[in-house]
Image 1 (cartoon, one colour):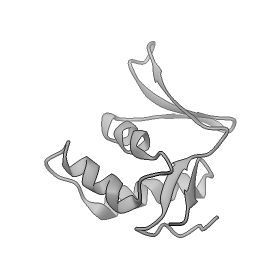
Image 2 (cartoon, helix red, strand yellow):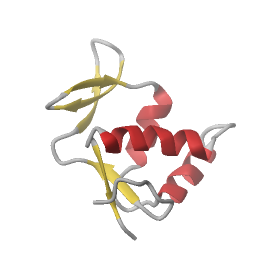
Image 3 (spheres, rainbow, N blue to C red):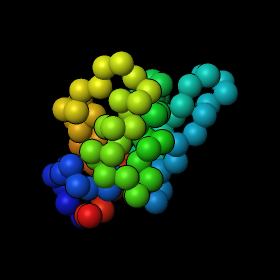
Image 4 (tube, rainbow, N blue to C red):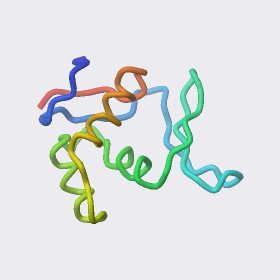
Length: 93
């Protein structure tokens, strides 16, 4: 797997990671053996689009349909941090 996020990569959650709604905290969480990450609505939306089918460009386009301001670099930075933790994996096109 590549460690450098490219616009043609197709990100998806690593096998051991789950995106879930935490009814106690009333927010989405990313659960992994290494810990829990509390997500804001935007982070949960990004990860919900990481299905291994959509490219990074397609994820950004999908976000533009839901939010007024989407910055490509911020989306890539968010995904890069999760790739570095091995919570998100990248498939090549």
